[in-house]
Length: 180
Image (cartoon, rainbow, N blue to C red; front, top):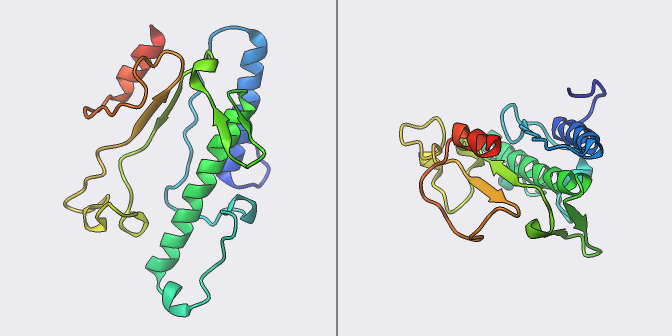
């Protein structure tokens, strides 16, 4: 359940997940936590500045951000960066990673007893597409390529890390994997 305090939704989702995971770890029994982040989905919402990339500044040249599309692109990139930061905070809060003095995250999957799966949804809208992907083949277009959603699996049971799997694994397969 999400806290009723007013805060950025991805931050609230991370706070709640960390709290729940810490309770499960204290219980000492197997558990599965599914965190379905609301970002970077519409409606686009500017994240709090503490989740901006270091050195970020809004464009000062009006030609760079004077269209609605340009503003949406900036906000969607900020939302993506903020979600990345919160996912890192979730790994640290769950005891699966540490923050290095450099600011980087140290995550060593083989050193844990926990599987981490990151699943994307079904694509990105035109305004948010980053190169090398073609915005004319974005979500909601007749040529949508967004049905190829990313899935990243990490943890001690991964037998061949670093490989790319080209066939899609559906959600039912993931639940069956953890059910076993």
